[in-house]
Length: 373
Image 1 (cartoon, helix red, strand yellow):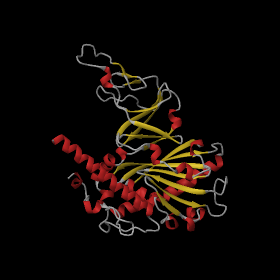
Image 2 (cartoon, one colour):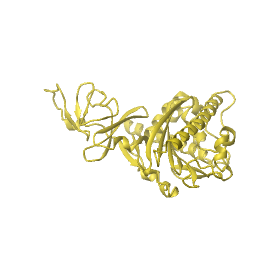
Image 3 (cartoon, one colour):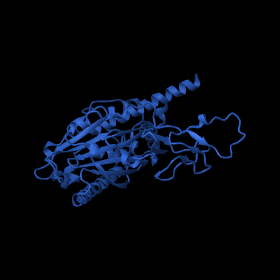
Image 4 (tube, one colour):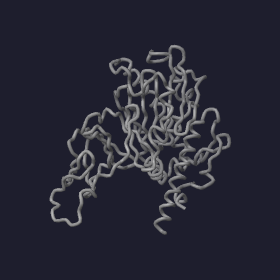
């Protein structure tokens, strides 16, 4: 069975249990290098992945580069205004088509000059005269699913994925009158963190640690009314602001913290959207991108104060996450228990992880059976 290749991946541990009876996932899932490879294939490689603002490909020929689960990806806007995404890989011998974000009229391989139009169709093949049984139609670029939601771009390497709008269903209505699509991209900030990506997500998904790790944030939010809601594909943590603590002063409002499985967050205040995108780098390292979007990008003083404050909160999270990573790798810890009141979203995330692994193993077994039949 494929799951036996991975640490502590047994039917008993993969079994879903209610939060009041469940244990947390094993510590080995956070520290074993084999789990990093599994996460890329079974989680990141089959889910919608955020890439950034749709403003990056607003015009015909604009190309934005990214990497998803170790795969080179490009996104562009073709001559009809349609979004397209392809592997950034020439069909000749694997050369790169684009090496940096750019505005192009065609995609030309930087290795041997094979050229494709913006629809991914092969148009020019230098020095290939005399080759037999060669049809350019058989060598179009490999397509990737791409979609836009509220001014943000997402791609999915998996052909069996659910539609992106179904994953986000209900978010627009829940945060009314806030309109995410009206906010303008302002800045990207990145952090490298010495912890497994799942440690970072676990930490994000509960307010349990706020009084101990983020005392200033605890004062800004009305922690007594901090609540969690669970949905099929995402979870929501939200809280009203403490009296006169809303930093944007646009309305009393609430702070909304959405987590969309497996590694994307929406941190929403009345005047600001902050997205977090978590990229696994190794079993014990991850990269976190923070993208900032604002209603009024000219409010420089408020924006810079917001980014400085967010950086302080992030610094506090980095310290605790890196310490937790060391604890998970120690001899003292294997599995823990959940607080039914405070850790509903953590339990939900870890349950979805188990489903993703089980689905991957099932499909791997099916493919293996077909090859051997």
